[in-house]
Length: 624
Image (cartoon, rainbow, N blue to C red):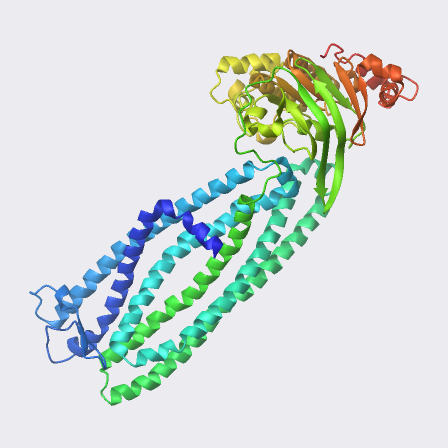
């Protein structure tokens, strides 16, 4: 029930459209019922040799009341034929106009409500911390944003429009049944609890099986995302057949889940058919006796039967509507789950805005751990250091030691579990996240570019920046030359993830973006480790321009890229085991000296190979 009210809250901005559409659908239902009433005068008056002007009189059996609708007909109509014909035409026109307008308005409200819901869901997901995206697969999020939203949209627009029409048709047709049927109408009441009970039971099954189907669909979307984005790896390892088989297995599980859902939904129509047939059979038996005893005219009985048959369609559709609404409720479960998810990184209510970076960044007894499959894994312990403006602190160590986790704490992609991080004396948890991240630029090995123009990728986050500034940043990143060789220069579309560019070109665009941001703090996370020799030289030169005058945190596989750093920290098993300048660490004969000897040993045990050693020796030693 709570989810229903939350969905209805999204209808509130469109309340006027909703109210008007309900009123129009009420007219549609009333006109449908009114045309049913016209069956009685056709049989009792129009086809009778006796003429009457009061053909729209409908006595209610056993009550002494009469429903008189003759006031709807102009006085100049003098016979039954013209009165009934006039009533039919007017009711048909009125119904058609109201049906069109009501359907349009209810869909306007439904689509508007769904657009707002989709926007809120996207906003909620986008604002989640990095940990959220590590816990939830991309396919699952896409399935919720697309498939779950579509199920709710279908229920709140298409189904709701039909539901309102059928509801008022049912309501007014019941009125017709009572007016012309009298005691016979009570026979129908016997079936009401049976219909409601059956619909509820089927609806619960539909909601459960729909949720299962959505999970299987999310699984397929995960596979699609992984194999399409990683298509080169799939091809390189010859895994096409294996991935195809994996996809087929997932598709079969989706097929089975959908089949089970359909098997539950398919019960509703046959059940309503059976109940309707039994009800009509009983009405025929009781109605025959009433006609024979002249308690009901032939016109009244025919009207009654047609009204009962008319009731059948709304009742049958209500079972389908109920199933659709149950599917929507099942889909809304994931929607609101993601919208209500508690974020690991929370901004305090009265967090203050960070004006800039002027003094120092301090790590005080910092510890960090994360949950993995129900277990807590300690990543960092007792991290202590201070970095001042203009300094370069480099982190080296084996893979998995915690280097990337450490630098990811600075922009608050994650929060520390122990200790604190201070920026100019302010705990990072006491400042607004937006103002903190404005002070930080980042260039990583895995460059993120968007399917947009070169200009918009460089100016990402600063859409109104002058073109001259964009070009200046590109020149400093040594990207201007290759950009101008592209078909449309800075207006060239680079494709999804920059697929039309080389690895070095993508990196230089990312560097240009960081230069344009002009943040005082810079994080370089293994920014050159995946490049060829020529590309790396260009990127290193671009990085040298980027690093000038900034406080820099560097993670690198190759020690040659960090040897000129102000200080170098060696991280092993989540702890800083050594810290000092390049020369100081070489004298300590510890882990750094061992790593250095492995990379620069020439012919004696060179890990990278002779050519690599020679190249590393000449790697832009002037990098700050």
